[in-house]
Each structure stands twice: as structure tokens, then as C-alpha cells.
Length: 109
Length: 112
Image 1 (cartoon, rainbow over the protein chains, first blue to last red):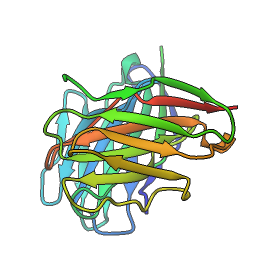
Image 2: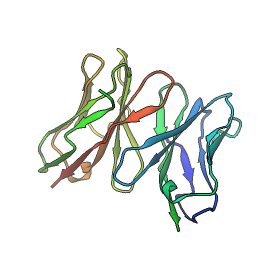
Image 3: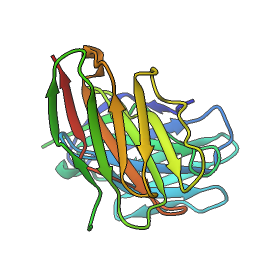
Image 4: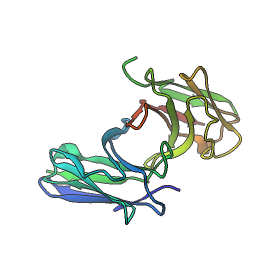
């Protein structure tokens, strides 16, 4: 079973914030976030482990709510370079990785 | 090598032909995954290898699809009797332990 991502797409102006959600019907072991730009392979952003803390770097951070089996990716003061499709990957046990359908983020000047 | 490599980068074939797609992961990455990405779609899990364990084939869409991994390194995904709906980008990813997956650049398969 793959995780469910929302929204499917979001359009922002530079400087605006966005939240992308990822939810699972099963208890999660870890959540991974990737960004894929058009025509390129997905690139790792961060991993959140069960029992771990919120992760982040610069203006992109994420949280992991184990009780709700959800993770959220927070993009603050978005930049043009943030445009792309964001995927969450979830594991219910180690190495059982499945990806959501993706959220297409477009940042406009 | 420095990263995950896949070959060919592009493959155009005729319906009904067999194709082989190759993935060469980063040395030491014991886990290897294959995904399929249709145009504008998400990452569809196909198959997963971990060391010497039996592969998880639960994502293979039909018995026309098969994959092997030789010597715990290079992997080959084979699609027999290709159909037009097989057209997609096929991505492989390697992983070492509890860490991120490193994706290859993908093979774009077009079935005419």
C-alpha cells in the first residue's frame, strides 16, 4: 500500500509558504522525502524515523506524527528553486519502501 | 562508481520485443529497488533486492516482467513481449542500511 499525499499540486509566489502532507493507513517505521525536477531523478531531502525528532535544513523542514501515521513537509519563504514534484516514501518495516503519487509544486516570481 | 548508473538511457522498441534494462548501484549498497514512472505519475514500486534474501516481487505488474541481481551488485530488469503501456521511465535505486535511497538517472522506454 502506498502512502497518500496531499495536495496533488500547489502554486506559490516566491516567498510564500507551503505544507505537503503524507499519510499512511499503517504504522510507520520511517518517512523519506524526495524532490524531483523535470527530467531528473528524485533527490533525497530528509528522513524521519519513528521516535525521532523533526528534521530540517534551511527553510525546508518536516515533522512525523507517529500516532496519526502522518508526515508533513514545510517549505517556508519559497524560492524558485523549490519547484518540482515532492514525493514521500514510507516504510512500515525496514526497507519496505513505497512512494506516494507526488505533489507538484510550482513557485512563480 | 561515484553514483548509480543505468543503461541504456533511452530505449525505443517495437511492441512484442523483449528489452533488458541495467542498473549498476553504488558499491556497498546491499538493497536495490526498481521503480516505474509513467509520464507525470508517481513512483510505482516494482521489485526489491536485499543481499542474499529472496527478492520482493510484489510490485511486478505481470509475468512479462522479471529481474535479477548478480553477485549482489548489478541488476537487470527484463520485460518480455513489450506492450505500449510499458512505456515509462524505469528508475533503480540503491541503499546502504537505514539510509537514503540513491536513484539512478533512469531508462526511458518507449514501445511503439
